[in-house]
Length: 424
Image (cartoon, rainbow, N blue to C red; front, side):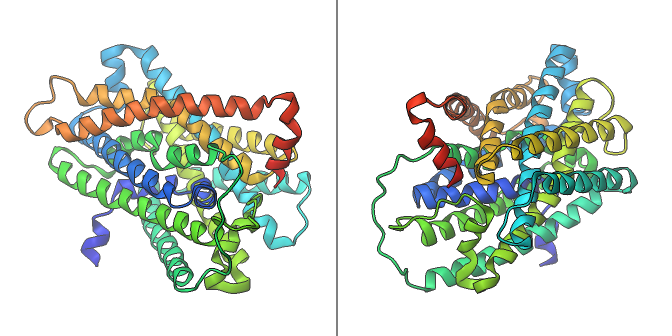
């Protein structure tokens, strides 16, 4: 067992951050809306993610410098800054969903009535200030985060797996019927964007350097990537299948307009305590990814402008704080609008897809340089899967841009319908 846990390394941090509250909610939404079809999408996305994480880990081990430094020396500082800004922007959107999920996890615990905007804003301000304080006070950030993520992933896997088994042992209390509603693709795109998170994969190279891995640890990087991302895919599949079993085809479908609605999928195992347990999981997911998600944007942005890429450097910490504050402000502005928090989280997750092509292309470029020979050469299968991932990301970016535009600019004659759908 000890050997098994040692097979986890930097990639477990990526997996745990990717499997945050937004991923849990979008997976539940996909299971309820698309059913078992979503399972094949998760598996495909997980395979592409394994390849991207393995590629990034290998680059972190074989190159002497950081990814942005390597891009700067080859293509110039503007390209590096563009990559840094792209990832920083994605992190800000992702961070806003963590903030929204935090409120969504606390609110149901305090009663059935929603909190006021002032109360929601106060919670987010206090939590973000505490996270910022811990950021500057923590010593040996990497080691603490890695150990905590291992514990978190284990707990989440066991909880959802136990519930999943009980649900499938119990018969359904309704007969599934075909849906006559038009299915919203945003949850599906959001789930793909979180499972196949090239932003998280890009950061793997930085985590490998924090771990101190070099050329002799390349095999460790591959094992780490396969084991950790497979765990991510497994938990996502369990959540999706649980939601499919409970919600899909219900003649009186739940709209899943709140965290409390989604928490119903835990009732077969935990009974009346389902809402509290699910909301606690949402809170744990939000808090665990709060700091690391912001660190991704802050570290890569700092590296792109030549200000350092180590977690102990000052500029990565300062820019991480900026990412935290932007995410908080965007979340408060979003909560000020009436509507479903689940929809806001789903929208934020889907928007992360838009920056994937640039990051994927940067990894492929660095992985195909002629000087990478012998042991330093990246296997063809990894490059081939990475190229497929890049092509998929381009398609996803186009589809996501179209869907987001339609959501933000609904036709006049269907505005009322769209609004009703948001509120559930």
